[in-house]
Length: 231
Length: 409
Image (cartoon, rainbow over the protein chains, first blue to last red):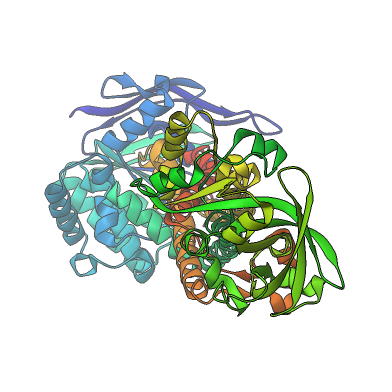
């Protein structure tokens, strides 16, 4: 399997605090195509920082993030915008969607920024919403959707543009058990069907149980990296 | 771009009350500003109309020395033939040949300095429409023992004489001898300017020729043109054709009027601009609040790859749309109010507007605003909206995506 992301000696220290905070310490990891990985650990262990750094939302203090043979840590801000748009899908904890756009408009949004043809964009958005079980909610705005439905739209949006990998920061944190399982089922299925690499941070045991690889961070360093055989 | 417009427009209506408040402020500010502007514009237009069409005419021709000395000794050479030839010009609507003499008017109660205007009643009717402004009495229809004089209502009040009363006009003849003659007041004219009513009397030119013993002398030829925009060409053409005469248009005779025409619109645009500047701070506040409330959402947009330029444009568009919506309502309301009041006029006499006549203005305002002014105001709204949007839009693009998404909405 091809390596999608590779980090080498990744460190991140926040110095704008009273005492410097070492959020990430010398992390070297590789993520292969199609992996379904959970980054776990207690609060403050560096999960979100790690996702931000490999997603190009934050710059490491030291080390490399190599995606597609390019170290994104050396990219300029404007290049990073473009890189994120073309290569990475994001799902955040909550309030992922643009409130003034309907479900189908939200799903089309990234493709619109990528300047995809309108027909192709619409067909793909419909297909993705169908895949996440929301074909009857195409024209609903987020305020008329439940939290679980909103996260499903967010997942559909992240995957619609066929990114190299999807980063999800605690996607089930605000969901009830039923909605969380439903979302996880969808993510797992899409991971298989679309062969998209999924990396998500969580401390939700329900999510951890579904992952095929679990990386545990403690105080910004990798404590454990387990591959779990689900077959 | 279409989606950006859609998002921006829908964003405006996320907080309906807040948007409606600022839109109302823009609409009210504009309506007020435009109404004030229309009142001033109407006032200035009335003044110009009064001055050009009822007093000065477009162009006046004099003997060059008459301009400085206003003396009967400086008539225009072969004036009646000249007037006839001018009347035949295509651009000329009417011509009035006058004998203008500065003199005195006296009644049993009062005397005052006046300009005595010897006129052909028919020519004056066509040139200044004097006959339409007769408030009392008649316009040179009587032939009595005493020659007729038409005086202003203000002057009649000062002389304490009405229709049929006798007044004495005194002026110098060509040899600087004094001539006095009794005239019977046949009519009283009104004017928007109290000064004009006080300072001018009209008599038949033939009677003045006889009294002054100047055969067919004319000191002033006034020309009314068909179109205002031919003024410059006609003035220069006549100057060239008659180099021995003084040819001046109303802008040269009354440069203060020219100043009014040139600068009124500019000053009014400044007034509306100052109102809009005040409103712009309100707009800035509204948009800034909206941006700060959407920190998380903007963070998501920046995270997923929406470029800063697009985010900047989105905030700009929101501001311009918000401002233009309020602006269009304000412009429409101004248009309706001004359109309603224009044919009716606003009578200021009840609130002491009569004093305006002392300054040469009519006490009945006719508000008016031309399409160009509305267009300029619309452009100003867009300008101030852009100005107001810069700070919030900059604020939006200086957000760090990773930090912004952590902010809860």
